[in-house]
Image (cartoon, rainbow, N blue to C red; front, side, top):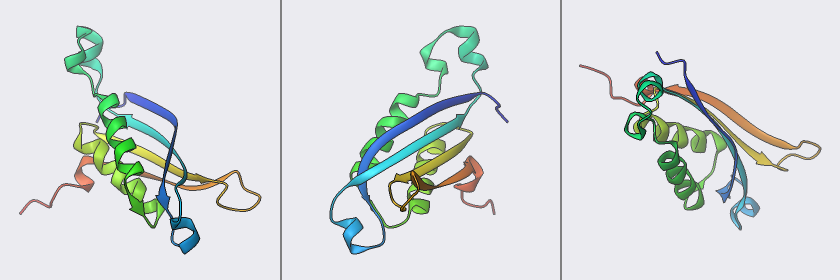
Length: 125
């Protein structure tokens, strides 16, 4: 398993998320942090962009997905993001999704999940 990491820190997006009616009336801030695990040895040796995990593409897909989605739960949004990451080449991913200002007296509230490719593949028969 790859131990190399790509870190995407403090991706601040706006989207509809929440269970309560008032949370679904307008877009809210959603803060996302990712750690993408991938083997970077080939890219390190070749210095060739064809050998990298394209984190720009992954980030664009996350932005589009979050801005156009209407999740009720941050857990569901985190799982959606994790699935996108492994579908586009990450061996494993840690996803943290936070809602700034969602809880009185707290800077933010969120979840952190860790998933790998096998978590989204259908079981072998």
